[in-house]
Each structure stands twice: as structure tokens, then as C-alpha cells.
Length: 193
Image (cartoon, rainbow, N blue to C red; front, side, top):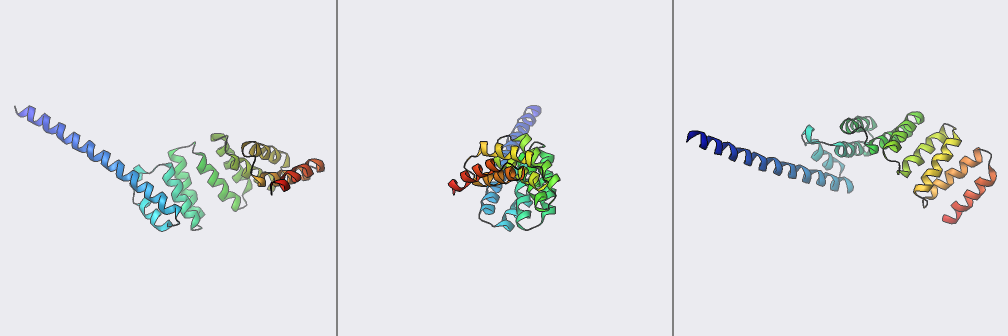
């Protein structure tokens, strides 16, 4: 009889701990949603506090991305880079982290490093027009106009309504000494305005 009671008690304890675990997961999910809402209303400090208090093992790549974004808003790119690397440690194919790293390095005029990160963002999300555009921007800065042109054409294929893509494409054609094509693209750009 004693074994049966012990076994039933063990089952009860396991059931309660499973309920507590599920309840805890729901609370963590709610905290993350609150942090996103606070971030979107520019309450960066409050959003950071919520995310910072999460247990380390409960943070995923999206949480580290949001923390990195908060650091970027506070002009602390080094802390942003650290958190983007933590996001990539959680998920090595997390294209958003590569994209944000590319943006940080481009802002530092480290165009080759930025281009490498934009290429990785594209590797993991081939439909990311902004990554093609920013990769082209870096290639323009590196005077690699032919590659920039190819990436701008891909960006336009993915998002034909973004007029910035056309302006930079016209610039590439101009630098490649293809004046007629540059004028044609500028005409399209001007019609979009």
C-alpha cells in the first residue's frame, strides 16, 4: 500500500510541475510580447528591463535581436554586435542578425565586412530585397559597380516599387559608362516620384 501512495504522489507532483512549467512558459511569452510592445512605442529602457530579467536559457534569437536593436537605439553598437552574435549562436541561419550586423559595419564604413554580412543574410533569405540593396550600396562604395548593378537588379525584381533602388542602379550604369541605360533608369525613377 505504501508503494501505491508514493507512486500516486509522484504522479501528482509531476503533473503539478508540468502545469507550473507550462504556466511559466506562458508568462515568458507574455513578457516577450510586452517587451516588443514597449520597444515599438520607443520605451527602450522598459523593454530592455523585461528582456534582461528573462532567464538566459529562455532567450531566443529574436530576443537577442530586440536587445541588439535597443542597444543600437542607444548608440551602443558594440553591445548590439555582442547580442547579434548571441542571436547567431542560437540560430546560425538567422538572416536578420546578419543584416543588422551588415548595417552596423556599413555605418562604420567597414564595407567589406558589411558586404559579407549582407551576403549571409541573402544566403538565408533569398527574397530579402533590402539585403540586396545594402549589399549593392557596399559594392558601390568598394567601386564594384558591376556586382552592385546585379544586386540592384535583384532588389528591383523583388521590390519594384522602391524608387531608391532605381536611383542607385542609374548611378551604377553611369559609373559603368552606360549613359543610355542610366538615363532610361533615371526616367523610370523620375516617373515614380
